[in-house]
Image (cartoon, rainbow, N blue to C red; front, side):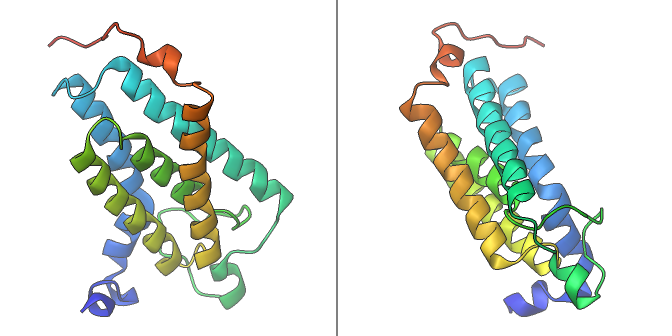
Length: 170
């Protein structure tokens, strides 16, 4: 069943999962903050800080470990909106998605599980779309999760989680 849903013939679904889902995840956090008052300003900044750190670490590692992407080796077109030409290892999409999901675990358990599922889908989509190997998304996931724990361990997110709740009124 899954191999039919995620077959290469269904490239629109694969492209959506690999390229667009992560942006909807970010948009969801911002929507829940602005329109649902689900998060404080500090929670949103903490989530985005984790995403930024995870993405930055992934980009630095890409420079240190240059590897070709699967589509460059097998000659098949990638099933993403863009054709990435940087290094394959590690996946910045996976690290960002997993950082976002992990940083939500203390705020809202149900949202954490939903976002963790989305992060798995993003990672899976990056592999099926031929822009990453499994090791790339696995390393990216570990980076994203690790970054959140490091930020929490050293309290780097605490200044943003002060008692004041900045909300946007409609």
